[in-house]
Image (tube, rainbow, N blue to C red; front, side):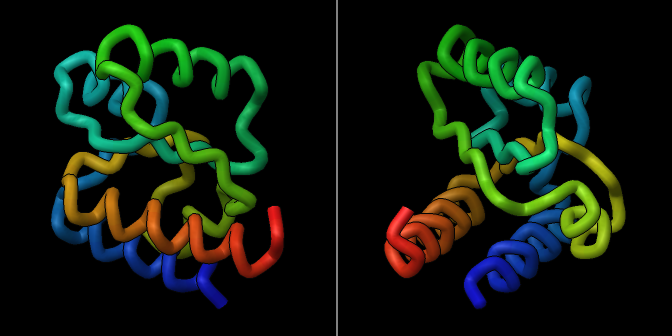
Amino acid sequence: MRKDKVLSMLGLARRAGRLSMGHDMAQQAIKRKKARAVFLCADSSDRLKREFEKAAQQYANGIPVLKTDITMNEIHYSVGSRAGVITIDDENFSSKIISLLEQEEEAYGD
């Protein structure tokens, strides 16, 4: 299952110190142009999703905003912290996670 691979990559990025987790940390990463992708959980509020889409366009020249079917509980299990929004602050981790999510979409026909 590719979802497990995405969660595993997020865990590796967390251990490498390449994630900004939670609203305030993610917002700072975007404004400081550290973020390479924004990762939104399925059970994040619509307001939070709109806020980070706007911030990504405004401050970071449209970095990818990844809306996933991964829940906050699954994030908590894989990275040890419960958050509805995460920024991936490394180009290599972000490109790998994006490719895994695209493969999952192709596999399920989304």
